[in-house]
Image 1: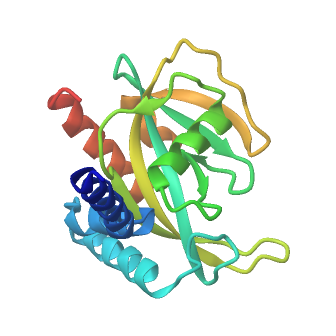
Image 2: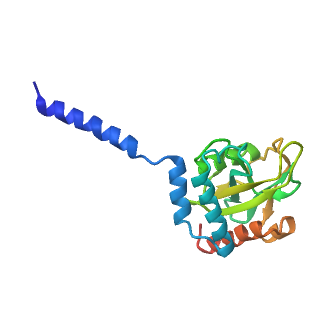
Image 3: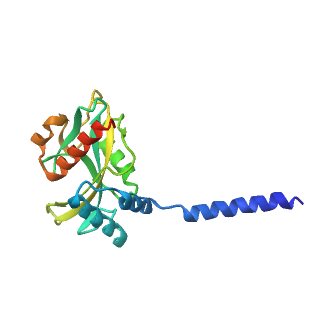
Length: 208
């Protein structure tokens, strides 16, 4: 009997089992990313802390029936020429916003943001422009019908896409529009949008 081969095979199986046990879950990876993320300012730092606290304290926070707050994922999409950003005229909120939505149980928020971007725009060219988290925001969503007012704990990722590819407006939007970077404030001048805009301008100077 080849005891050496038998021992090697057993060791390999044990190592594989140990690796599986040690592999971090998507939730754990997200927490690691959030804890090493460098906020833009003190306001964003406070929001990052709230997101970390929610994830650590609320097991079902990735489901949209978790109240008073749950996780969402957003896609901040810049065109390949780095001149325009893609906005959706949100049907329910009646605002021009970045694309995104509920996590729906998905704990890999980069994947969820990618899915939302493709579903809400019809773009097949969407791809992550930079690894890691781009922005974090906590904002209130007003009550609507039988859904109480609640908070979205939103993790945003930076994407690129082809501006010449046809857009397909989903049921969640009134319209989609590529907005010139220097005109974004005309469509939405909220602190959240302006913060992401400033980050974009900074990254463009660094040649994202």
